[in-house]
Image (cartoon, rainbow, N blue to C red; front, side, top):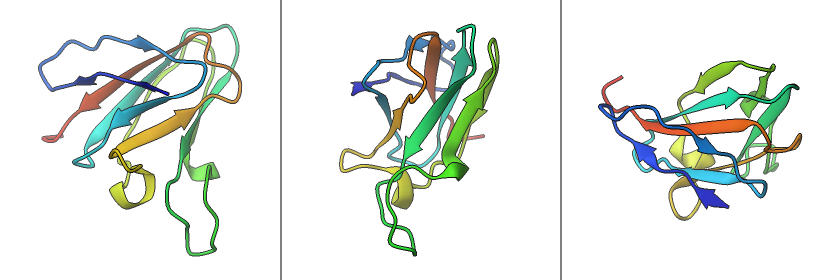
Length: 113
């Protein structure tokens, strides 16, 4: 997986191209947001991988953390719980079941917002 650069509050939003094998971003403080831009001509999904078993003993991708983007849409996903989404490196992992082509991503460190 590729690691996205973390952009702080005064940095301009510069998008990274999604990696076919997935990406991850730092969420050490639990205040990182992910901006996603679908530049493809089809609807794409971004799935965030849970790192901890839930109360039902399940682990992995769950419906409450799947972003579905129509062509041309930009969205911002917020509030990734540390205990649920951070891996051992304190990063949130994401995969692209519909492919990564056309997805642009920006990890935004926003502690004051």
